[in-house]
Image (cartoon, rainbow, N blue to C red; front, side, top):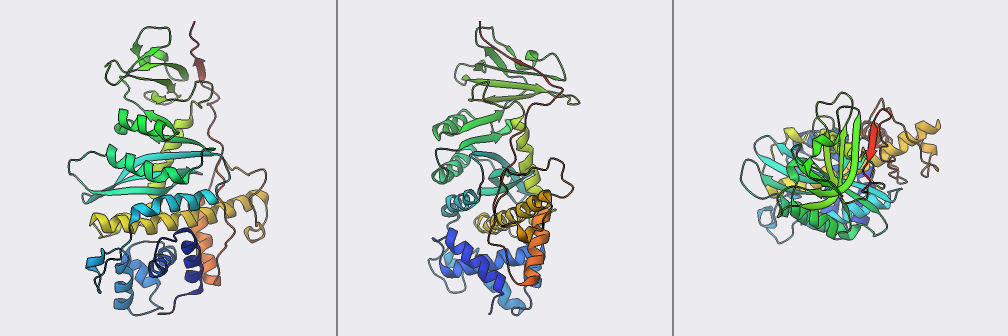
Length: 393
């Protein structure tokens, strides 16, 4: 089977960043990514249709399926299979090789495929979306502790991040855990975790009170050091952020270890981007919700295709968006703009821009190799927010 030129170009890049994969695995992964972008879907049948000019249906089907099988399940049983956990650090290193900032925001969340499987995902938040860099797939609707799995994902990513970067780890209140908080700090990163609205907090030098009482109503925010939680066993010293924006029914209550003057009161708003990243993996982009693949180990390998395709498309979209901001053709922009360009109100997402231009490149028979990721500055406080910083007396 003769692969298209663009697939060989992708294979070269994949081989550079995933040297632990065998050449056959690199070729198969490159073909999957190429077919996923071409089909605008990672569903197996859609990818086969997009690649149907290369070989017959059965040949393509068997070749593509082999990438996700355990070694014992392959047509020629062997001991060779992809260990996805060993791909997380290389994947993040690849992303960071394009990264144009010393700030990195990670988010933790879960997404489900119906009632079949659930994926615990760590993603890099980027330009209104998210790029998955580590995940663990579990059967859905079964009891089990998530926190140890999440901690394992963070530990696997840590070797890829240098000590010079400021790393935020954001999570919603459903994932609050003292163990997760401690592990994030042990890694040298900064937790920013939303906690329950009824949490109590003792500001430094003051009596304990309900966190929501620290703001009088919408349009107000409060930031200060103190001790969260009433129970001695789970108490945590840190900085509490309470933000009640206009139009919201209730405030955000977020706990972090950053000093009050160093933390952005609206940084937690970045977390919503992981939800938009899941949309790119599903209806907007790769149609994960339509796949019939439900065995957790195979789904986990399948997610490697989703992650690599998303990374490539987002980097391509970045080059296009930056060029448009400068008013030039994307093909003429060869290096990241300095200073970076930032577009606050997007008519088209970076993901959709990148997908469109990847398809255009495939039609021309070549792909861009000069790519980058230039994140936007983290959000500043809302202009209409009356903010109070607690200073102990």
